[in-house]
Amino acid sequence: MLVTAQRLALETAHRGLRAYWALRRPHTRGALVALWHRGSLLLVGNTYRREVGLPGGFVRNGERPVDAAARELAEEVGVVLPPDALLHAYGGTHLFEGRVDTVDIFEHHLDAPPSLTLDRRELRWATLHPPREALRLPLVPHVIDYLKDR
Image 1 (cartoon, helix red, strand yellow):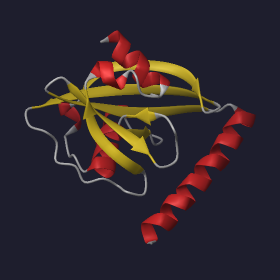
Image 2: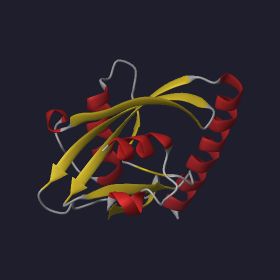
Image 3: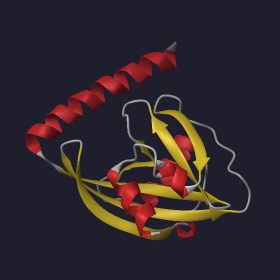
């Protein structure tokens, strides 16, 4: 019940942010993690957006993107990696959800499948997908660029 209420609050807040972003066109900064295992990529389905993405989120003021990526990975899927285990693989800017969104993607290759603990308020699901299969999904623009560049 509490998770359902938190999801509703998050979805409502995100709708409000999208309306604000559409009017103001702010510049935002994000950091994502491409977690790979045996050629498959961990993708996540958020509760508040239709598009599929990678674990990650906004970079806080004064925070390095790699630190934000490691923090968000732990918060969203329970995978704890030190920032120095994440290699920068992509940087780009897109107009997305009404904002100018600059995103860095860091990647890490796992020897074993990840043991995931999902933040059920933010994520509906998280699963591994081969890149060709992933590109058939409604991906966020930064992830499309990242996969096409690979």
